[in-house]
Length: 286
Image (cartoon, rainbow, N blue to C red; front, side, top):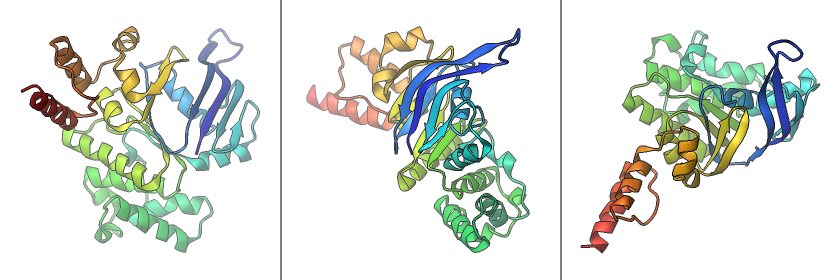
């Protein structure tokens, strides 16, 4: 479940007037079983980076090793297929990928396409639909009869049913209202905890990065600008300002209090944790 980048460069439109170096000498590792945030402005190289993990884009030079499968410039399609089987990708609006006549058939499609028997595919589909709290009464319904939230759960179950060892979330809460946003992120975090897989979250929402991820990698102009523990990166005001990254609301509040002489005992990941730390400070300074 580990992903290793070694001296990876990616060129677009090589040997043309439009040649562009999209990734520049990337050396980094996504370790097994961790929840990562991958952040950076549009055009920083995030999308190219994730597409090299499953062979959608091959390195122009260097290697990407995805859970033991090595991808490089002239990797054959058979090997690329092995990498794709290890990486599940949840794009924006995953419910737009639904197409089968029933919920059950839609979730079974991926495993069966990978060679799993119909009986085993059904077993996997039922397991992951249950994991995402999709009631069994919905299994024979058309996915297009469901609510938007239910459709999204079915689409995600279809990805999980292929049992990837790495799950990439590319702006997974795009277009959702605040309540649905919170529910969706909590859903992914619960899946991460239950399955023990490596998760990579690509988002512009630094509040989600702070609350859910263990480590952060920052991309800028095709290069790895920084990496480290989430709290270490997001509380580095100089670094965040240099790369024009938004500071999470809770971190900004902690920093404002610090300037007023109020020093909390720890770094909260969300509002609830902030309230508890602030209560603790008040009790100790009553």
